[in-house]
Image (cartoon, rainbow, N blue to C red):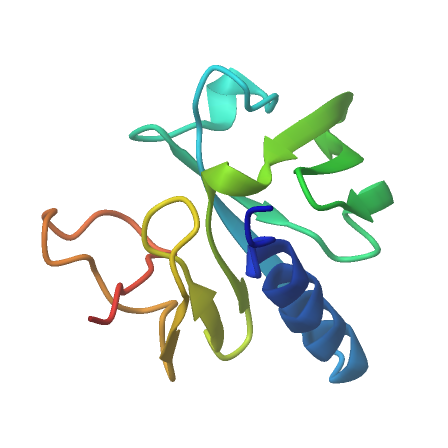
Length: 133
C-alpha cells in the first residue's frame, strides 16, 4: 500500500488557520489540462484564487481535488483544482503559508511568500511565491 499524500491535509490546515485568524486564504495553482478555471484569468500558466467565504461557494478540499464555485467578472464558474496542481496556499494579508515543490513533495515554510520570486523566473507581477530550498 502506498503512503497517502500529506498535501491535502496541509492545504486544509492552512485554510483553517487563515479562517481562524480572519485572514484571506489564497491558493496558487499551476494550470494544466485537468484544472478547470476561467482561462482568461490565467497568467503564465498560473492562477491565484481567493478561497475566502465571500469569494467562493460550496468549497470542498478533498484528497484528490479542490472544488468550488466562484465569480469572475460577474460570471459564475465551477472550479476544479487537482491537489497535484496546487503550488501553495497563503494568507493574502501577511503572505504566510506553505509552498509545495513537485507533486507530492514536502512543503517548505516561508515567512513572506507573497512578496518574493522564484529563483528560476524573472520577477513577475504580484502576488508571487518564493520556493525555499
